[in-house]
Image 1 (tube, rainbow, N blue to C red):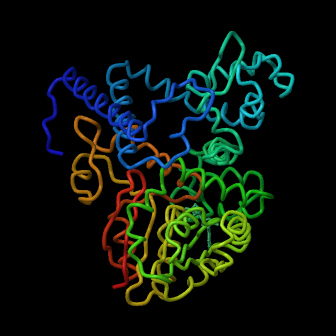
Image 2: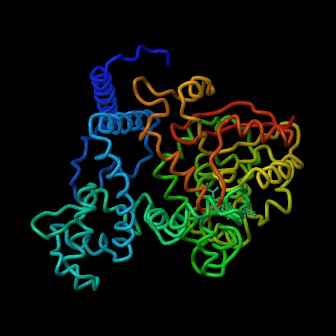
Length: 457
Ligand SMILES: C[S@@+](CC[C@H](N)C(=O)[O-])C[C@H]1O[C@@H](n2cnc3c(N)ncnc32)[C@H](O)[C@@H]1O
């Protein structure tokens, strides 16, 4: 920060073009490092990099690239042009969802050279012209390709819709583009301004619950999920898919797991199926891991580990202990309490209750790792003041990286509509944890989410 900011609009756009150019070259260099060419957008097969963990350098480059592209377009185009585009962007997830439900990518995978829309229509019972409409919307977003008039084929992006895709993203695509999220946005304004729902962060008063209330349902998101057949498993898979999209497993390289002594105990609290701790366990077998979540999820986690990594189960390197983390404390005396994407599901009251339950069983030397987005305020002064280990956007890029960091804010919005909760800033966490006698130690920036360490006071 503090760098020279060009004083004319034209100079700013040219400076952004410079950033864009450098960032694109940095991303290309990451392909070079692996001895790989950059893929063609319309390749009908996955590129070796598509299924790999993106390095932090790669993530940094893509963040600046996306930020600069979005800012250049929003600067040069007329505002009406950009805003009308935004207002219609919800059609894209609707098309993704329909394409997944109709199994388009799976059907096309049997036809590498493409399949005519009439044949796709017969297989899916969707009118051919209507199917063409949604396919072309996706093609303009670089998902699928139209190889000749009305003949469609897969490309690298559409391959992510395959249920067996290496990145396991199909479940998260379905979840984010699906009925539950659409319902949650349908009555957003009404829920925000409703005298019962609007003023509170109570978990039963989310916009989703406002919509479900019209169908006679009340409760929290997780109570709701646990009533839906098959959803607990697909939700856990969706979490794994989200991780692969965010390059979350960089935490394996950033946090010093390897220096922890044998039998260091790690409690993965609110573990889901343990899709993160399974990787921690594979890379650092000296750790003893306990997974804790609601009973139904822990049952799924046991099946998942038995299939994916039975050695750890058989060697007693992982144990599974169900709990309701609001009603009871986690296993006592652990060296590390690790919580990934937990606090953003809950308002301050629930989060504080959970923190106190953890604090109660911490011993001297225990630490708590919060793995969540840190949503900073986006004004230049707030960004200037943020913790020194967090990255700053090169000017004249918008202080928060604009589109390059959009997932922090789409997730913030998602937590609002689904859980009546939010992503927090570092200052929010420090304040909340202080109320539970926990002291901030440091933060590791994973170029999207952050790992934040606290110890008992
Ligand atoms: C967003 S998911 C995160 C899962 C996992 N940590 C990850 O990052 O993939 C939140 C998890 O919190 C669990 N959870 C929700 N309420 C809970 C409760 N009262 N007690 C224990 N776990 C709970 C859910 O079952 C779910 O697995």
